[in-house]
Image (cartoon, rainbow, N blue to C red; front, side, top):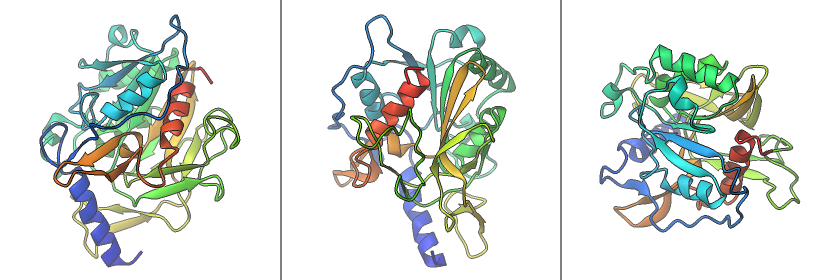
Length: 307
């Protein structure tokens, strides 16, 4: 893409991400969202408990921009709770799946200019890794700059290397092999919960460890913009090739499981309250993302050890 296209792309992202949850600015959860899923996947005795982290200045929260995410999970029988405490072994033992969506250091909550600080204390990273190795499951989502920097230590604990930049929206398909044919998550195209296409709406890219499986893989012509300041793109802004890099990957770690994604809005539904336009910022009901909901459920079922 030519430079002017990259600049426009970056400015568009600024409009997407320059506000925070429930702040009255345009990007908000779609209040009319209704999950397509109508099937309860679990028995009353075996309902996985999902905790959504809200203790680290998270940009996406259960009652905010990730409310549709919660609706999708509850439609399938997950029990969803919120976490407002630092990670400790005692605290983590009460959950099956921990969701960390776009955490930030408190210094960057309202100010996204450098420096970008890490959101988690070293002790939390140690406790979280131990919890996963002993059987816990983690869904880590780190969108575009500055979110990768905030979560890089947790990602690195499992061998993932996040790039603190941003990429274009992308469509991953079975046909061009950018969407992996994972038997438990993608499944057969003809099955009831099969997936052949997943769409993302910007975000970031990352490199995976050898033991991980990339579900969403970038093509050879894709790049990541690496500005020093979020969305400030110039002719001199660094651009790196992300050929073969991932935007969604999974890993079995000890007795536990980890899923890492570089984009958050693909798993929710948002509305521009200034115009009333649903899906204007992308999401579960956006054109091309019709199977994102099923993909999300398949990932969550894998994390629950159901698949």
